[in-house]
Image (tube, helix red, strand yellow):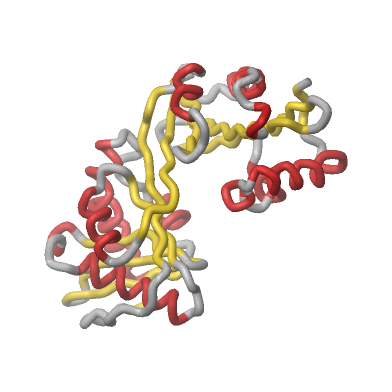
Length: 277
């Protein structure tokens, strides 16, 4: 039977299932998931055997609904995932979204075939890497904490640095708006290095993660990306983090070479599939 999630009756049972499946890290804080979810469905058959939740967002050009779906391993390939998905798609269709997407961990069983069966096509992908080594030589340039007097410059660097990659993967908008930069690029510890008061490179650190590593186009290919990465890594190690994680979009060969040559190892590979509604 498929039914709506009830925090009062289902939270503890759902948490036990999540722990049993070993997906606590992937799911994160269940209360936060519930806050951000438009719909949350359970499949019950002598206990909770599967669940699915959805969220939605606007990227200034499209309304995108995202669905996450999980089935207890020994109950997979029995149609539970298909039933959950079909019911969730019905609910999502009422929201008038333009695109429906789902994130598939390559480590999961048969994710690609299931996505294709439900009418999805590959959109883009990203890889998560982890570093578990010690401190590395400090870069020979100075990094300072971002200040709002650099905002206009920072926005342009974001737009110029990510445009080609976003366009290649059809991730809209291809040029991030000022609002998007404020929300996603300036919400943690951002550090920049300058040349004649112009931003050369930037790196963000947050809770054991290196993020938003970028170099202004006119300074690319001169080693600033590596220096920014090493600065961020050492910053996190000094703060006591024993492992450092980062993600990069598939197809960014320069980033992959930089990270692996700096000691990062593969951790997760996630594929994003979509279908137009």
